[in-house]
Length: 231
Ligand code: FPP
Image (cartoon, rainbow, N blue to C red; front, side, top):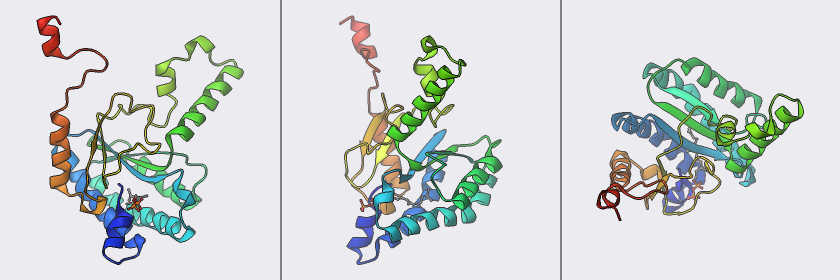
């Protein structure tokens, strides 16, 4: 959800106004994803690197997450949305941890779209935590080194049970992954949108999905037409 700061700057507003406008786009994005038949929508809300922003901005972002959960949880629950949170839960404020736990607990049995909130998330940090867990299991004698395979790692990262993303959309014209889902994005398609996140409306989301629809995904193999002609 990139570009909130630039959106605010362009209007002579404080950066927080951009983040606030960004939160208002979240519900629309969830609705558009449901309409498009998407099963899992992951939003990168706060990265493990975002702590290095000015203290006031960090505090405003924490406030916005509280606001979002308090205001929208009941409605998301009514709409059958299941919430999952990825990221390091240990190092965030206890009241935010409690809100995130509540959001997951209340919506656990819902059967609609899964909204994955990446909060205090960094892919390298996620992998470090998973590797430590595996090392501890081996040391305790609960796991054999030979049992460490891709499935074992996938089962110990934060997204365990969540399919790898088919598509990552980054707004604001930046073309990098910024420590997002490094393991999971091995075969993901990327669509980079020039618009800033507060302008990322339903039409922009559908444009990104249409671009995805034109991609030929091969997963390291050859495409079906090539196979047919035996080339
Ligand atoms: C990136 O834009 C955006 C963020 C670091 C924060 C996104 C968070 C929210 C919209 C609020 C909380 C989320 C939820 C799910 C309620 P930027 O500030 O880096 O923009 P810039 O590159 O233009 O400065």
